[in-house]
Amino acid sequence: MKKIIYTDNNATTMIAPEVFDAMKPFLTERYGNPSSMYTFGGSIHKDVEEARGKVAHLLGASDLSEIMFTSCGTESDNAAIIGTLRTYPEKKHIITTKAEHAAVLNLCQYMETEGYRVTYLGINEEGMIDINELKSSIDTDTALISIMYANNETGVIFPVEEIAEIARQRNVVFHTDAVQAAGKIPMNMTKFPADMVSISGHKIHAPKGVGALYIRRGTKFKPFMIGGHQEHSRRGGTENVASIVGLGRAAELAEEHFDDEIKRVRELRDKLEKSLLEKIPNTRLNGSKDKRLPNTTNIGFEFIEGEAILLMMDAENIAASSGSACTSGSLAPSHVLRSMGIPFTFIQGSIRFSLSRYNTEKDIDHIIKCLAPIIEKLRKISPYGN
Ligand code: PLP
Image (cartoon, rainbow, N blue to C red; front, side, top):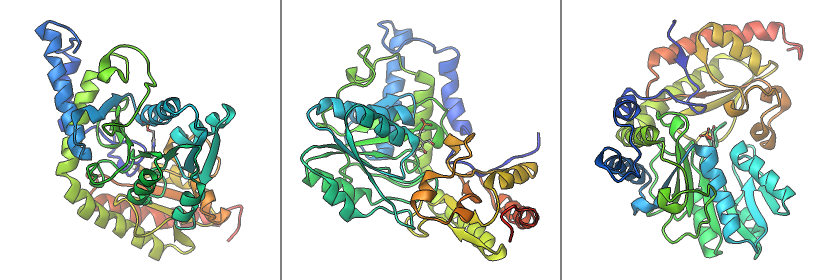
């Protein structure tokens, strides 16, 4: 198989070899149930707790009990939102944004059918929310503010610390979907007063099917998954031990690689972005240039279809994404780019490149070399004309 140049890390990531090694014993000889009394099973409880400690460290949590393992980012988001709404049944208002991932957006839309009122904060052309709109949306009926840390499509980072402070002052629970931010930029929950934070394993080089929800000590929370006593009786279900251990190891590695991600990966991303914007006419950067994750760039190529670009890049072994990869299969234009008011002729041809520590300068050079001729060829046959 030819080497793939993988630049779709906001969709999912490669399992780090160190993570795979850490998981292996729990997929083979150490298969016991961590709740068992005998050593063969019970000793595994210690490994789960060690992993919890590593995730707690990544997030700067002050206590291990603040970390609840889940099956994915979507479950973490659902647990936070539904758990909070169940805790405050008398409150019927939720505040979120138009830029959220489907894991939050679709759930909020569903909650509207259950009698909830939802405020969807708008975003401007930079992909940024307006803090004053947030402040004026909070009322005595507001149960929860759920606003993502960083957007999966543009990488734009929301002012979550300020939001958390506002929520605290107004006595409203604040949840942030940090699925894209965790492991890419440092986070310290002792300084950042959010009540709940969602993360997902497969975005940080751990396997798919594992995630975590940070629940600040003292935050009231009614379980979303009702079952056994696992996870302090907040999430029933026998622990996905191998994946939890993998998530712990991935959290540890993410911390080790922060400097690389913030410096080298950012430089690679900037080189790619600058070259494409300079070399190819009628292109634009979608989203804020500065308040962004270091690994993400979203570039609009006017007058062509993103899917056509993806197919031609695929022939060159380059993997990227048009719009949110989690909704791929749908040709609907991105709800995030539409909310930003980006012209339709650019939205259709927008491509997201999201890098990881495994990308090299050679990868970037290959993309730069391939993309200009691809765009030129597609524009010649574009039905929009040029
Ligand atoms: N939230 C954001 C911002 C995401 O980007 C994603 C996945 O792309 C999710 C939530 C869902 O995470 P998972 O795939 O682990 O359910």
